[in-house]
Length: 407
Picture 1: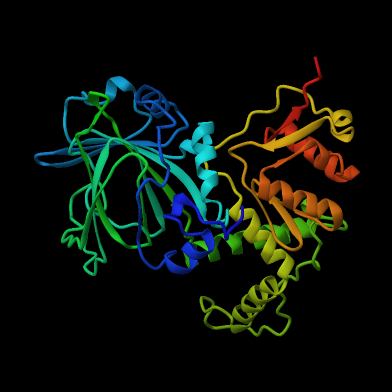
Picture 2: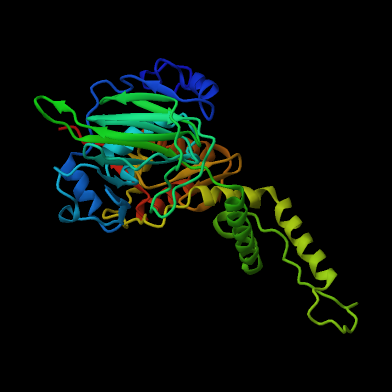
């Protein structure tokens, strides 16, 4: 992606300009971000997706006595009638299941993949919404069809209502108001309060469904990161203790972990007191674990590419054709569910890490950035890289695309 190319998606700003002026700073309203926008899923298709076992969905109904929320899967028969006002169906991670949604999400890859999360679809009848709230992450709100009225504000009072199943602000004070039609989009930075209400709209003489697409981003907290990284560093140490020369996936083995010893420990009259020497040993162990930059990078990369618990892969139905790959007769395409990233020393994919150097490293980074390799690129892969791609194919992480023979 040319980050200096102006985009209609960003109101004529280039990605570089948008990131400097708006990202995590101030909202941006974009009229006709996607001209001629049409939903990637029809209403029946969305309802069918919400009924699937491994798809995250929620039904939210606003009632006279308050809010009601139901977790999915949600069958079509479990939804209120379309004539009933004030209800919303939320379906998370649509990009993992629908190619059109996945393709749409790729337009936002001017933000690092480590931050990009998923595409959620909100279907609502007139008056439907989820109440005034704020998110801890950035969000693009793209109107796919119908009409929704948004009220937004820099909320100072973040007190939430009691006794409701949603995080709804108690004293919402909007500062601006916009009505979004199909193709319009609103960007909001983290903690910017907003309330979106579906409005009745016509399209070609009939009622138009209100569908809003939320492109959300990951914002890991410091405690969350510390917990995950320390756990993974501990696992690396266990692996190193069992390995002969290198850790798993080619990670360089660190020295054998030391065991706590206390030959100078005196007899104690206070057996429940923690020994000061043990506290010092624990502190030193943490310092040693954090000293290894490769281990820390591995832990972070594996965590950021770990698939969500609801994601699983089916093994490939067809065999990997190594001959076609070497002959330049096949390319590869990452599965939509695959998360792949890299740093200066590693390639990370679906929670695993690999040391990568030289031409093969450059090729793998291109695969991560492009999410595909053309036949002319794939044929340049070395023996080990080609074998690794074959393993990923067999695991269902990518698919091989054979060139069609001339008729």
